[in-house]
Length: 104
Image 1 (cartoon, rainbow, N blue to C red):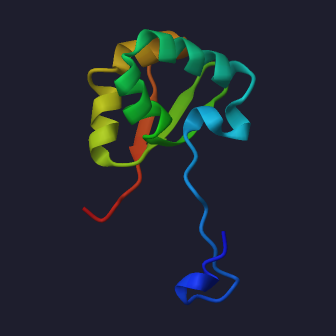
Image 2 (tube, rainbow, N blue to C red; image 1 turned 90 degrees about the vertical axis):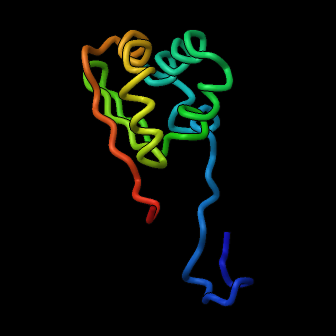
């Protein structure tokens, strides 16, 4: 989407956030299968908040998993209470989560 209407030139644009399950790159393959397993294992509100709307990126190669979360509190939740269910869904023994710094 062009940011021209906000006073910027047309070379600056914004990318709308899409929930993880709606993104084209996660519509098939191992990552999609693991996300579907995770969705079944987590409470719906937790999945929607911390996974579907809380992750910026999911990188999974079948044996290694890295997540980029929206904020540090989301990172804390993913590596804390949801650690075991994420490991089980993605069939990994451990995973890395980094958070995007929001300035607070």
